[in-house]
Length: 337
Image (cartoon, rainbow, N blue to C red; front, side):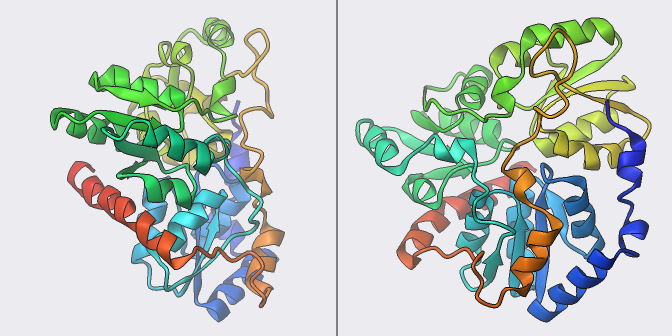
């Protein structure tokens, strides 16, 4: 269960009194930089991001913020594909990350060589890939989407009569297929966090909290989604937590979301969905190990290191190819959000 004092300990007023805030604020000014962080990073990262004028958001809003911000340097706290996305959209900017070793299981599940072969075998299909992919996979795609606009885009393409290749998350792909009825070939990738949520353990927890609501991310297995009162992207889950009537909410996504969710609805009780056991939460399981690699010390080192060992660089030709479907995503998102 979440504790309000965990969120309260990272209040902006407290963070601004810290030594880390003073150091990072100064480094951001020196580098003409801003921090962009994902909801799944740890509370201290999210708090320092907001306190220094940065943005904590989902993948889509991270991309928009980085593109529209005037800073010459973007410090992206998240996983590698997020830094690559920022660089693709902002080739003229310096894009840094706390570490370049923060991978994503969905990205790793979709190797370039195998995916290209798969696409070559189905030349009549429109290629739609999730944002959680490498620059090389994005460059092969016709469209890129985040979970917040995936159903809208696939429904749009289906109404145009297009047959689709979807990659890499199989659970999200099946959910979209079920919602839209579209003709989709689905790649067999999974998120190591969401794939571990178990329906039976969730049912057991529901017995303990019978008046609770279940919110789930669509990267979760189908039998988990079938139990959910609401299914949506990270930003959509936060909005649902605010509007839902129940005071107790079981959350089937990475626990990093609790920081912003508790800010949005401080009166709600948030509980981690179980990944194992007999109805009890696994307190360390619903955490992406790569997201946890982002920390304050690494942010400071990234902004201090003049050799820019943690800088994202993408070959120009690859950047140009990947930019086209990313821009399609941003333009389409303006119509549906």
